[in-house]
Amino acid sequence: MDKIREAKAALEAKAKREADQKQEARQELEKAAAEEGKKVSGTPPKINDQPSPKTQRNFTDPESSIMKGADGFIQAYNCQAGADGSSQVIVACEVSAISADSIQVEPMVVEMLENLGALPVIATMDAGFFSDANIRALQDLGVDPYIAAGRQEHAKESPPLPRGRIPRSATPKDRMQRKLRTRKGRRIYARRKAIVEPVFGQIKGRGFRQFLLRGQQKVRSEWSLICLTHNLRKLYGRMGGRWIKN
Image 1 (cartoon, rainbow, N blue to C red):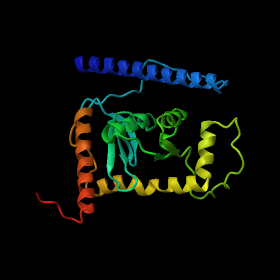
Image 2: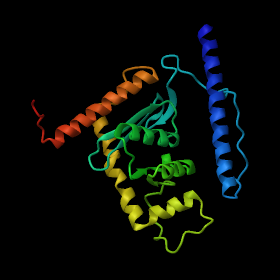
Image 3: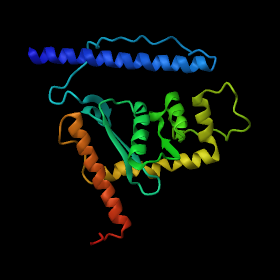
Image 4: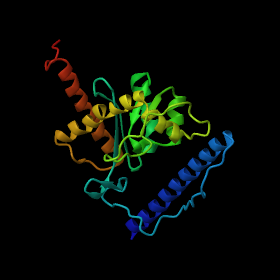
């Protein structure tokens, strides 16, 4: 009963935190729209600070979350990695218990700045990372973002190249879609599949399929070690398969 009460209290605290975050995000969205002389379209979402009756908590690793994977729903962490465009070296990595990728963008870019002392000139990301707030945040940091604003079906033909000036009424999403349809945008975004996608494929190909530890801090350390070994292999390859001996 003590464990059940503890789990109930933790679920209620988590629901309250998530509700506060959603409320803060909504206020920022409305503030940004007001600065542009606009209003946020649609009915404001109902934000509930109480956990859903179907909310679950894992007793083995309560810091993890239920996320949708390739084989269905699993108990998991969301691992992030930012890779250099010329070498596939991982320059930033992080672990989160939140399945949404979109809220990971700014923290990852800040980590790149801490690790490298510089920011990327261009950043490419798939549709899971798109949001108006991320576009503004990256541009404010001086990073040129190329983020898919939606998933395009493979069978559909690409829309024609845009012409003329961008309408003043265009939303950030409209502007990004237009940007990615230009020749330059297509060329830059196409590089994403050759930069970060192979990194995850190479890590999985070496046999890493699940974490051995429990708890977000331990899992973060394990993921950092995995990324470190990936970088060492890249370094070893760049040196022609030979380590320098002192």
